[in-house]
Length: 472
Image 1 (tube, one colour):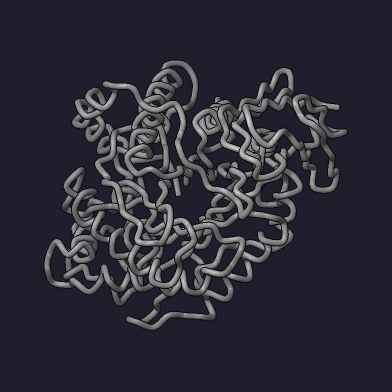
Image 2 (tube, one colour):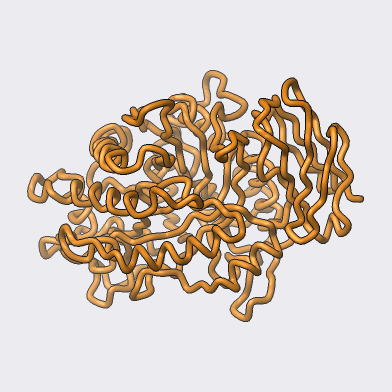
């Protein structure tokens, strides 16, 4: 979850790391990702949706405050097809080695709400500030269970003006150091976490809506930071967890995140490539986040702040494409977002949608909760985000994409791809801009489903195809 953030500490880290940014900018980055998530026919999926939801971090049962009617409203209003669904380690493994199947069944019930509407689901093991037992009132953190929280009597502040400052409290640092086995006193914790993921994967391996697992939200290294953290304990956790998941699930994608501090602002990541023990082509992808530094410091997307934000987005884009090339997998932007009532906010969202289309990344906005950061207010009324996020896009492409571009001024969507015979291309068209559907050029034939608002276009099975869709 994002709030006005870490001004002094964040700025200092950015200045210290500036040399890394400069060196990372040398050399050409790829223009697009080289691999994509596909459906069971082999069509490339454009994943467009929300995180569901921040509320899951604080509810007693670790489930989001969400109804099936909410999912239906989202689908009807914005045509989303993807959700990053938050889970909690504390709920998966409430006691050491004991896995709560009732919790997993409740998660599966909610996944089913999305499945009915054709969504794809990535399960995210969420944490912020380690866990809710870092403070007596349980309100500061989320993620880890109490039995895995070892503060060693070190202090944690009762309150901070900006929530990330808890990461620097001695008790929180010690909890992470124990998890990463920096202290050598609790080497079992990392294996518990990996085996908890095995229990999750075993439960969801045959669920057709689940496409993959996001192994840890915004990893924090405690007293170990930077490349030493990413190449050391974080890489070790990912290797152990990949092995545990693959012992029960050979098919779903596994997504890894780089460390959050710095990388979320555009700094390069030292995360190594991970081998996948599954039979066949590897299925390891990336799920980074982006919160441009000027906005993370409380600025709006206007004036000089806008210029600085665009520069940091350029760094982020180049560095994440290099990281994706190193890993050899697809990229899903797991989080981006801001207060959409602030000046320039919807323009930034538009820019993020354009960028992810340009480079071939999926995206999940933070988050589905009501309020100024989300699509709806507390009464369920749509906010400024809804018309921006109701964007025409190809949900499934019958080949490998070369270009996805939408011109908001002319309402023209262009989809260019190398056809591979995997099937027709399906394009979502929002009601406000395409009230009677769309007219498509470049297709052999097309059909329109007004209920789902899906235009299906059949093209030749090979060669470069260009589809252009405009309002009917």
